[in-house]
Each structure stands twice: as C-alpha cells, then as structure tokens.
Amino acid sequence: MCRAEWEGLMGLKKWESKVQKVGMGVLGSGGSGSGSGSGSSRSRMKMWMIRATTSVLLWTCIVQLTALGDMWGPRVLKGWPSCFTHESAVRAMDVELPSQRPPLLPPKRVYKNNGYLMVSCNGGLNQMRAAICDMVAIARYLNCFLLLVYPSDFQDIFDVDHFIASLRDEVRILKELPPRLKMKVERGFLYTMPPISWSDISYYKDQILPLIQKYKVVHLNRTDARLANNGQPIEIQKLRCRVNFSGLRFTSQIEELGRKVIRLLRQKGQFLVLHLRYEMDMLAFSGCTQGCNSDEVDELTRMRYAYPWWKEKIINSDLKRKDGLCPLTPEETALTLKALDIDQNIQIYIAAGEIYGGERRMAGLAKEYPKLVRKETLLEPSDLRFFQNHSSQMAALDYLVSLESDIFVPTYDGNMAKVVEGHRRYLGFKRTILLNRKLLVELIDQYNNGVLNWDEFSSAVKEAHADRMGSQTKRFVIPERPKEEDYFYANPQECLEQSADEPLALSSST
Image (cartoon, rainbow, N blue to C red; front, side):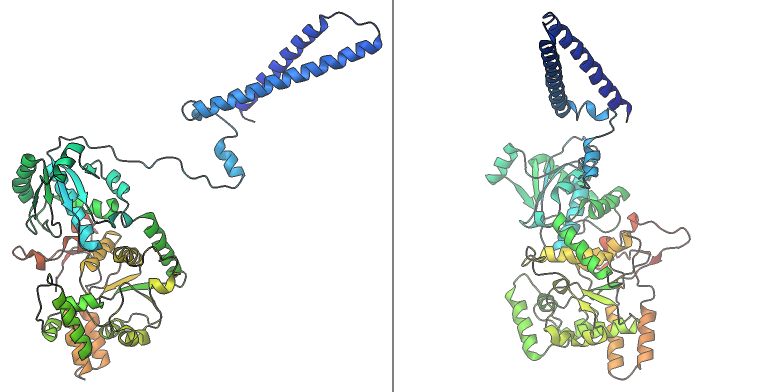
C-alpha cells in the first residue's frame, strides 16, 4: 500500500473514532435507565446510531472526493501519487487504453504574411503529390500563407489535418481564405495565372511575389513541374523532401488497408512489385501498340483522337518503341525478369489498372511467374468497396505496397515510377530495377530473331542493369532541357545520406 492511500485510510479511521465518541456523548447524556432490559435496549440503540452516522459521513466523503477528482483530477490531482489509478484499473480489466496524449506538434512559425498563394492541385496522385511539395516550398520562400484548392477526392486520399499541422513551423496552410477575401474572390476579383514550367525559385521571388503583394491573393492554376529540379537553395530542396516523406500521409483507411495487403504478402515470403503500365489509356496516349491485333490498334487510335488535350495524334509505334519511349509489354517484361534471374517462385504484385488484352496478354508472364497477385485477388470485395471507381485511392494503395516490396520494377517511367523510386532511395536505397527500355527492346528483338542465344541475351541484360538498381547516384542535369534530365523526386540526392566510402556515380536518364 502506498503512502497516499495509507494516510487517507488512517485519516478516515481517526474520523470514525471521533464520530463514535461524539455519538456516545450525545446518547449518554440522556441519563441511566431503570433496569437491565431498558439498559440493553439503549446500548443497541447507541451502536445502531453510531454505525448509521458513520456510514452517512463516509459515503458523503466518498461522493465529495469523487466529484473533486473528476473536476480537478486532470489539472491538480494528476501528479499526486496513487497506487490505483484509472489507467491501472483499465489494465487490470485487460482493456487497452487508447493514448489520450495529443501528438507532438512543431511550434508555429510566426512571420509577416506577404499575401495569399492559392494553388490548384490537379492531375493524378503522384503528379499532385509532387506539385504540393513544390508549392509548399515556394510559399515558404515567399513568406505567404498557402491555400490549396484541391479536387473533391483529395481529403479521401491524404490526411489533410496532419499535412497542415506537421508543417506549421514552416508555412501556414489554410483550408479557406479569411471572410473578406473569400467574398472578394467569390465575386470574381482574383488574379489567376499559370507559372512558367521548371522555373527557378528566383522567378517566384521576382515575378510572383510582387503580384501577391499587389493583389493580396494570386491563384496559380497550373502546378505540375513548376519548380526546377536543380540549382535551388538546399533549404528549398530539403523542404520539398520533408513535405513528400513526412507531411503527405495517406488517410488512416488507406494506410490500414495497405498494411493488410503487405501483411498478406509477407506471410508467403518475399514479393516483387511490378508497375506494369499496360492499361488502355496509357497505350492510347503513347501510341504504343506492340503485340496488339488490328482491332486493338484501331480502338486505341480512336481513343487518342477522342481526347483533344492529347496533342500528338499520328504516332509511329515501331519508331517510338525503338527509342525506348514505350512501356514494356507483358511478354517483354517476362523475358526481362527471367534474364535478370528473378526467382520464378517469387510473388509478383501487379501495381496497375486493368491490363489491356486481359489474360491473353498476361499468359506469357503468368507462365514464367505463376505467383501473380493483385489487390483484387488478395482482398475481399468488401475491403475495396469504398475504393471502387476511385483510381487515385487505388493508386495510393499500390504506392504503399510498392514502398515496402523487396524489389520494385517499373516498366515505364511515369509519375508513380519516379516518385516511388525516390521514396525507396530515401528509405535506404531499396532495390529498384530501373529498366533501360531502349537497350532492352533491341536485345529482345535480337533474341527473338535468333541473333542471340539465351545465355548471351541474359548476360547482356544483366550487364546493362548492374548499376541500375536504385543505388546512390547524382542526378543527370541538362540545363536547357529540364524535362529530359533526371527528375528531382526520382533522386532527391540533397536529402539522402551518402556513404563515406562510396563515391556518387553519375546517373543516366536513358
């Protein structure tokens, strides 16, 4: 028994003793009775009165102490010693007590606000992800308040409250404008513009900041690839990383389902994530029709012409493939994985939408690697009920599984492939096989035409990818053609720890 409890109990006993004495005095003052029978009756009455009085007083004390504990406990009594607390009571009943302590938040940064930077977040999941990172860095550099105008499903993908709170020591992020400015914007008084692509941070300081100071609110209606990959202050680069790797967190529903998929895969051993970009819209947009029959080629062409914002209409699929600008087909992917000696018993998780051509096109890959799985085959339909017809939420699930895989293999260098590549570098240079498609299609054609035998083909594929496994490299810089250089989010080298005895190699964007 601890000291506090002992002292409390002893106090109650002393109180009880005093009550007994008082009771005896009061009852004894009535004088002596006549006869033994009346004396015995009076003794029983005295004892009953003492017990009743004591009980009433004790219960009154208990009620008062309980009320005081509820009122003052969180503020005063919390620090008092106690042998039996609420927490210990819950533990005694084998009930897990959820943590009541709020998450630690960084202190708010106090700064003079130069105005409001309103940005529209659009595009797919990873295009939107990179854009948000850039806009946070820009708003911080300009000392502005940031207002994100995001699509309706944004809050169904990202934990918005965590995003705002975790970055509050860098920039103030708003969910809506102050009332006066909000009314002004609603009446159409808003300066809107698309910033120049791949701009240096100085462009925003010299061109955008004066506009913000003049109009108070400036709306940037395009946010994709608006900040240059290279030549930025180290603080800007590190903030882009912080937003990407810490500030942007998926909703708890997506995180929990992602953990479930990973757990199911881990129960059966190692797994490889194959980002197989062979969906219908991808093929129609790129004009890549390798392996498609004439009806499929016509269907893809019609789809490309149906979307006016897909500017390139006439595409030579063969030439584009030989330049390494087409995603690998499922058949080409099977040959490549086998040539790299990927274990044929490994689980392969297909991180993609519906594969164009269905089982017919997947037959060759399934023959070489029979343990093909997808989220739809691992999970129950009820698990994915809230994700159906929400491509960005499905992509978020694939993103989480891709991060945790033993090997990640993208067959095309789209936004997800690049951002996952960079995130895996940040997590410790996890094995990511970056396929050299231009060389691969040349070797595959030589093998299929009998120019190379299997051993020659396999040896050439291994040699070509020996230094393309997601290890430490420097970004490949092309100052006049930033779209063709290595993407910052694919290799955020400023945020990665470099081994002291391992010099950085120069990566190639081929």
